[in-house]
Image (cartoon, rainbow, N blue to C red; front, side, top):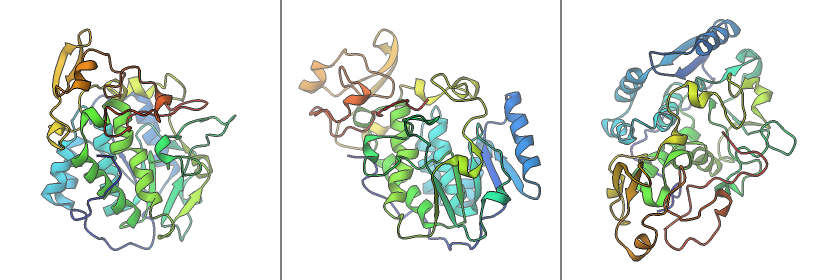
Amino acid sequence: MRLNSVADTHLVPVLKQEGAIPRTIHQTFRRDGWPDEIHDNIAHLKALNPGWQYTVYDDADVERFIGREYSPQVLTYYYRIDEHYGAARADLFRYLLLYKCGGVYLDIKSSANIPFDEVIHEHDSYIIAQWPNRVGELFCGWGIHPDLNGIDGGEFQQWHIISVPGHPFLRAVIACVLANIDMYHPIVHGTGTGAVLHLSGPIAYTLAIHRLVHSHPHRMVRSHTELGLEYSIFGVGAETKHRYMLGRHHLFERRPVIKNASKNSSVGEARWFPGRHFGGRDGYEEPHSQDSRNRQNQPRGIGQPYRGDFEPNDYHRDWKRIASSESGTMKTCGGRP
């Protein structure tokens, strides 16, 4: 039942790894309602990188791409991610896109300050960066998760991906995410931000790549700043603006990440009742075990399954009630918005 413990490779084709990173920039965002900052950033990226192709994909483009380039089963996995979790759908899409096409992927809120021709080397096939998260650095504590304790520096950033087509790292990530979709259960793995980080986001991305990191060519840099990349054009901090500017953030979601996920395992069915539990908030009703009866009416923090007085730094507590401890996120000296 532990996410990121297995991979499902049979649906992921083996593609030939190409020799050079294509001069293509990829971003994805809904078609309507773009803030002025997004328009300005797109213009900036194009002006900074003349001679590069730029493509932004809306939801319809994403669905067409997956349906055209992958099997119907892979598109079904994409649709199984609840549409309220656009970030998780975007995670899977970016892996599928870069595995097939290569190039540079950037989150729509992210930007660059140095032309890509100056930071991407001729023989680069894949570039991995981590957060500058040491004490005193701007992103102090970001990317530090209990699941990644054995990885110096914490998570590998996936708000940007720079890759040749067909790189084995991305095949491994896709296989991991598909397996996680099959395995996910809201009671065990939670909802909201914690669940997304583990199911499709940087924790899944990091663990899948780290297993192969010594087996395939890549370049590791200490920080995205070495690549001239900017995490958010809206700024950073405890109240990061992009949460509110770019539509509903998964931080605020309480519904399951995967549709009909309670049928994925033997944990039991978790019934979803919008607005009927916990003082009118959306919530679950657990299977009726002794443990669930003991916790029936305890409120649940955003992104957490039912764990009573759960706190993020209680991650290693011995929670005998559930099969794994995968939804919390440890914050050391900062924490990630």
